[in-house]
Length: 125
Image: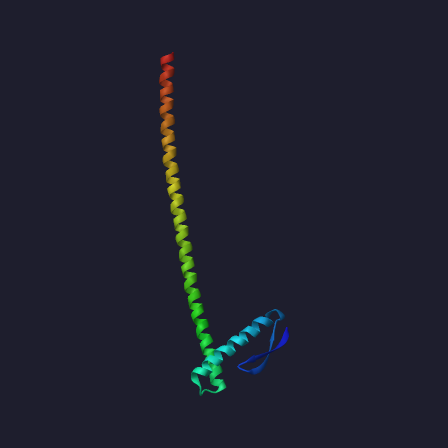
């Protein structure tokens, strides 16, 4: 853990983060600053507290939408997985059916050959 000095909307803040998160925290601070500046330019007369509050709401809204989209994608993935499993089982059933048909054909052919061999054996006696 370490103390990290960052700037958010040109104001200094000190945060504590893991050593491995330093670059990410700085990137996040830069992202918040960029978003706050966009909102400040759009509103012109809002004070800093209102700008940062609106920035938080915008980021929270984007997070909410991303979570919803992730949920939809997860559902689609599950449906796709279920669909693939159904297809796999259907194809396995078809393969089993084809194998059964081929086995029956082979059984009939061997039975026919056995009968012919018995007929030949009777004639040879």
